[in-house]
Length: 82
Image (cartoon, rainbow, N blue to C red):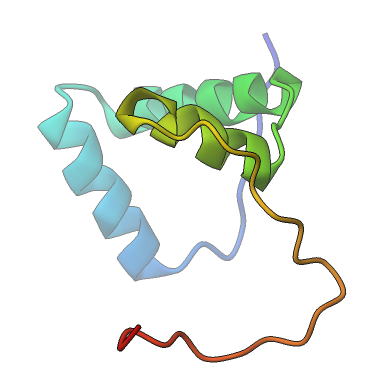
């Protein structure tokens, strides 16, 4: 098995890792392995674009129309008085 050494890790990061490991009932070393495995798995997943994710999320509440493409348009403030 491979080994990884992390140098110059801030003390507060180490303490947060310890607390996180304790919450999950693992050693700090096992917690770091879990975090790294999870991060490596996520890279393999295809990332859906924002519009597709929004359409999927709101599909169950009645979104049936296509979302208008706003790329290239200047940003403007929301108007909640309409």
